[in-house]
Length: 274
Length: 274
Image (tube, rainbow over all chains, first blue to last red; front, side, top):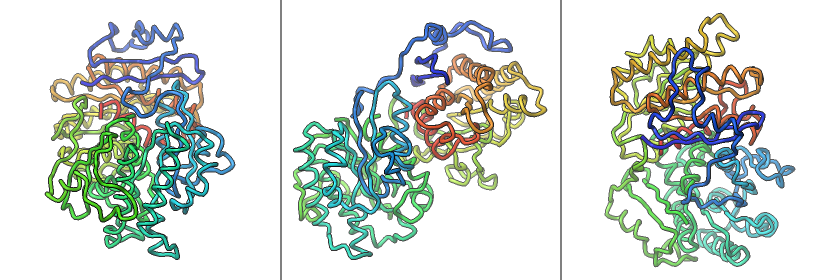
């Protein structure tokens, strides 16, 4: 039976404490028809003293208390975030409605005392060269401690279906340039690189995959070279497409559904050791 | 930098292996304009041999390979699951669209080789006595190894707004009866008890909380007494309501949104040590 713990907090903020049970019967309280009137558990007793313990980030987590976390990328990261709110750290409107928000809000709910500052600066339609163009304002100036990047699907897709001339070599060259610059300008930043992904449904058919996979491999090798934490979204979506139809995760093959965004947040959080 | 690992699998099922990086530069491959043509990493080399490694459930997880997992409860668990599909283990239609599905699908995506069998038998509107009425067919007969129960909001709410006569004492007595019976008929089952919750929005105002909190406390004390893993959903929702408006998590105060269901799945998975 595993440990479990949680931070609890009533609406008025009067109490804030950890309840921790070990799977062993720790309380003396019996449960029955008068349970609500029985003596408090240890945690409830602590509550009376208005203790302010809260859960700590795990030792293995990439994220440390006080960190500024920045999500960067394209429409999948953007997820209709508000530009007007973009300097309001942690605000839902600022974070959009995608995986970045779901991952961020899990962190903020789990670790209210960690003083995390979380931003989303994904922009719909972006390719990696466009991240480079806006990197000072939308990355370096924010001085992130943790920088998560998800970029690549447009680098592939816009070449395939549009008039973008960039190739896999352009993607590799531009992405390397972005990371070298990041390493120079933010030498202590903890990098998280996310695997670009496609689901085989909607606009996407299986013939897209072999070439697209090369973009994933470029990103993966850059993650290794730059000692980044790797978030395997393409692998996740392929596996998920065996659990339920790919449409469940990303109806058009590119943009995640609510279910897809939830699964991405789960995978992102696990990758960073949360 | 934490370890990270993932299982990867292409669409045709030809390959299935773990990529594992340690945050150290493990590959000899350089990355640049010819990256796609360079020698494979160790993981990719393993792929050529069509190895079949997959990630294992963590030691601390309540869930073991081969387990049958059953989610039980009311509308929040039900989440529009298909009755026609109810014997189709792991199927999305059978699981509905709520936290049970999001938690289950994360497990199925993460641990494809664990041979988990997951069912949802939540029924909208149920109170704890109604679980008792259908417990043989909808629990014991399924012989779950892991049994997750979320019940209580209707035991409170239907008394408050409807003609249900049950009280907090009824809830405590009926819930104890259910768990004693479960302990007798499924002596080895691993119990997961989920805290019933309300968000203060929609149909719910803050005056509901003090009495409702007693239902949470009954469930919590029963969890301790029956050595169950405890999932602190009410605490989670109160905390979440400080991160974003409560309407973001449960518009009517009772039924979770997609964001709320995602956060619940995250909290459930963490509680079971996944």
